[in-house]
Image 1 (cartoon, helix red, strand yellow):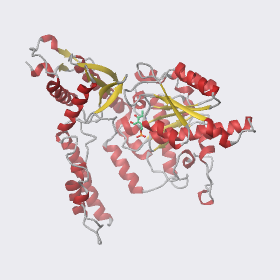
Image 2 (cartoon, rainbow, N blue to C red; image 1 turned 120 degrees about the horizontal axis):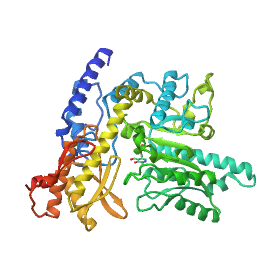
Image 3 (tube, helix red, strand yellow; image 1 turned 180 degrees about the vertical axis):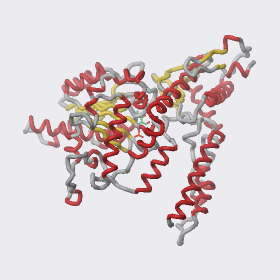
Image 4 (spheres, helix red, strand yellow; image 1 turned 90 degrees about the horizontal axis):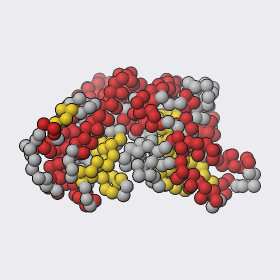
Length: 503
Ligand SMILES: Cc1ncc(COP(=O)(O)O)c(C=O)c1O
């Protein structure tokens, strides 16, 4: 393909994506295909000679699109958001277009240097403690990883290496294998699956500690576990605190966990994968009080900050521990600029690295801090609007509403909520998933797409109550003036559609 054909193909692909976003609201969010559908549509062998890009693009529409789950549909409310924005898509395109790999400064100076500046911008936007920033006097710094899972794992490996070095120095009679066999990591029973996986991959026992009724891990629960393990001859090494848990977006008590970790010389990692983006709004920063006691902090701009997957921001208080744990030198990697810029290959698992800072730069410049704050506040307001709707129907129990995530259930046995979810899924118009709150089954409803508006939440609620109606019919009631309310943040008239329908 020559540059002229690339221009045509690229423009047609951009048009296709733009058209997709202009019609996404009208597409059922879940696809209709059955497992194995694709194998029957593709030849068994690759083509011997090259085909036209027009045929390929047509096949995207014919074969791929029917099997797409529309993550950016305004009716997608499962999991947590995965970010998407046009500036970010163009950033990805340019990154792929340049095709550089930043394994050292000389391998592409702009790549390392833009990443350093972007991590400072982001850190400042969040109000992170200065010690984490590349621009601070100290040894801290930020790096873009591929995922929160990688960041948790990298934190664990660095903590392990640090603990082993320290203990071998103070206790020369202990062997490396003896120490490694006794190390323990801790997080809460609400933590993401990736936290447990980090323990598995890093061969460190991971204890998932009980949380309080709000889903938070508190200092006393951690201290109790540490005391038990120390009495059993084990060595506490790593704690992952959740700032915005996956099930309900609960916040662990950092002001209690931090002092315990610092006193016991345990690496404290903060997993703020989803909720971290909200700290660009100063009114939410109180939820990360205590972060200055952490050794590493991570959040995903690729979740809630309009930067396409993958872009996971990780800061460490002292980058030395990453470099000590991951530094493997070779003659061909030698770079005479050593020391003047971070050698990011020592801060991550892979040798190669993508130019992710470009899309981040595009998003931060084109939206600006105010544009991103508006996005976060708007999504939180929509979640609050849904929670008001849930509260207004006495067949439902509102369980939590935190950031852009609402959890609720049908009152009574779990089987009712299970049936509600099952019946909604069958219609394919909304995508919701289940969760647990205090051992009860709940519906998790996250505001995910940047396209979701009040009318979409109304659409969801209508679907939810129409489905609930088949499970628990309501007695009819006519709409009264008091059923109309003004939503305090959205400043819109919100009429409970359940009542509207029965008018
Ligand atoms: C709290 C939390 N941590 C970690 C993750 C994993 O994120 P990633 O896909 O970037 O590894 C998630 C994903 O939803 C999450 O909610």
